[in-house]
Length: 294
Image (cartoon, rainbow, N blue to C red; front, side):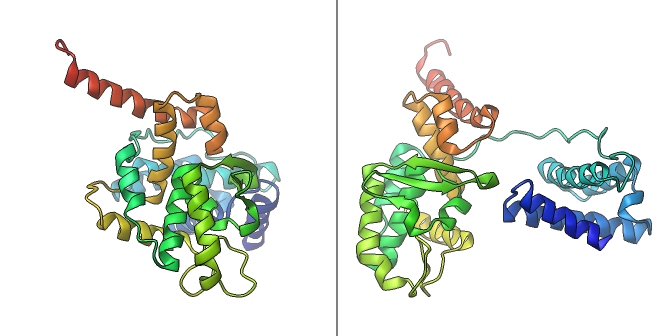
């Protein structure tokens, strides 16, 4: 069975071009399920039926897992059993008739335009690390890229003359994202006066840590928390919030939904449409406060 699982993850990596983060999540969820059936049923993964999978999801629910987490675990199992069925390891996919738990769609937390300006302006740029931090968050907000896309960027993928970055997104699909003058200036300052003093010889990463190696997603999260604490912004903000803010501010200013979809690298328009709900809820709030018969 171990060999089958190994081939499965190789298939996901090569044939389906899944990101390393997705592969890690699938491995973790498959191991959790495998441990469960080993402990309680002493059977092989190929002997599982839909009733057992339903039992497992019910156990997760009783343990207090959120619907979104249960849906994620089901997605991992569904992908695995689709593979087993496709290549003849099992007769039918036991996850086929199981519905994804209904998820409560929360509107993502976003910064206002003024709050984004406060955050970016508050970063001290008198040191190489400060120049880096300003460039990191200017780029996240200017381009709306994912945190994993930002930390994967190499210097060669930035064109300050033409004002764009070449981003490698989900499924290793490349897209070209324009950036504005503030981000261009911040990147220019960092590349001239910050990065040369920080990066190890031969390091290709655009953003580097204090030891000269590639800056990690966890490192960016820590830096954002540190800079948010130095402002009066009273919101729970993550690096992904800057991506949400990017999309929301574009739509608020009248940008076309499909253009925003392209910039974000969303495969489906429905994923982008959640940002229209933010704009609509903002309009509703203004209406309720201002209209005499609201």
